[in-house]
View 1 (tube, protein in one colour):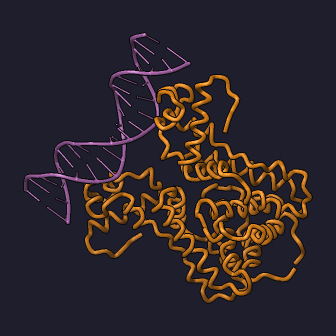
View 2 (tube, chains in turn brown, purple, orange, blue):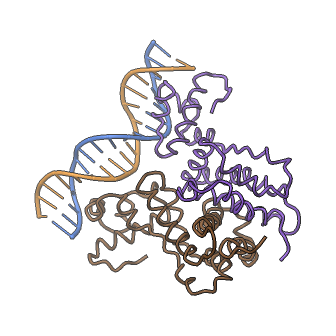
View 3 (tube, chains in turn blue, brown, red, cyan):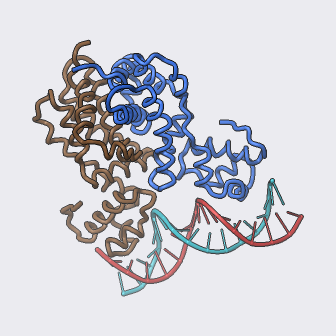
Length: 184
Length: 184
DNA sequence: GTCTATAATTGGATAGAC
DNA sequence: GTCTATCCAATTATAGAC
């Protein structure tokens, strides 16, 4: 949540915005809220970032530790990917929900699509071989996104309380089937 | 989008609200917008429904034609369920997106959870047999929700343009694996 | 039941002094 | 670069006449 940007005021605004947007979402966070947490005046928020939407797009970037999967064996990638999703921290969850709930305008939709491509589609597609790799990667991304959707957006409490390993095994097996399809 | 309710004005408000919330979502739809489309004054909207949120919760009910799957053979239910998702009309899509994007408060979260349970979890769980039925049903619901999430919230254009049958076959097979697991 | 008028708040964004 | 002061537009919701 920190960022080594030069002007301390701008950095304070950025940090406060990232926290509040992640905690409360776009609509419920006002420019005044951000200024208050940063300890500066509201006008400076606009001065430094142009608009509230601009600041949102600058701070809300989905940062999944998906690079850690780059060198893992492909035959267990399904389980490892699901395991990563289940152990992702609160901040990523906040960004994901904020992006999802703020979607509906062109700029916001574009950002959500980019996040989806970069975090799910691209890392999965790069490991796929065989026929229909493009569509399989996108179905795999849908499957992964569906888990986060159920856990975080819907808040399926049974799933949230479920045994970690059994979710990883069962859902990971389905993801694995898209990564390395088996016959019949 | 019609509803046989008695007072014509109240019915006009309800219809206008259902249309606008479905088209533009909660935040972008004002009480004035609804009143304008209904051809009445804005104060009547509150008079009849108490509040904007109340009206939203009254109109935005996810109505998937999921009962049509009740008597289908269980061994092809996966494909049929996915097929149903892909052929669902614009109005259901609007309700789904409106509920998803409006979530984040207690009342809205509850409604989204109810919609998820009634439309996905319950119909799937009722057909499941064998061990871990509860968790399998919820993973199945996550999988289905993930497809709608990818298509509608993210707007994955490659998936939207993909061959209908091949999506049904591939993604349906994964859903089927949760409904009727096969060995090893 | 319906409308006019307005309350009461809040929002993002700007001008201009320092 | 920062703050004071404010603008201006928009919101939901209410009071009260008809």
